[in-house]
Image (tube, rainbow, N blue to C red):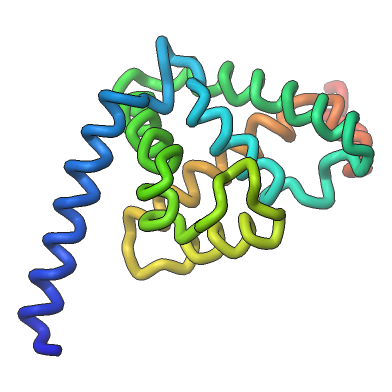
Length: 168
């Protein structure tokens, strides 16, 4: 394949993703009124299972409660973001929340809620190591928001052996 043909295909693919992502964001946004909509909750719940694997409680019921509390903290963190950043995050979550976007952008075939931890970690690793800066940025945004929201809560510190900040 010639370099020029490859560049044209890449630009065409980026254009299709941009149009599809914008259309999805209007039809099924990732955020509504600055809070996670169902697609956003599904994506962040799955990302949390993958990124926080080993830090989440082992018991299924306790883990479900920890993830629910985590999603409330993600909501609070997202609400504090500037409007332009929330808009971009909403588009990303809308894209990832759709089946075509999930497969094309994250490389994940099963739905977020149905994917196993290993599949989720492989998809995130693919985004992290991608040659496309946009995929790497999306990975870092999802991972950073997940870690910040989870580890900001003092109830998670004991499991890590962190006693908390010292009094000055």
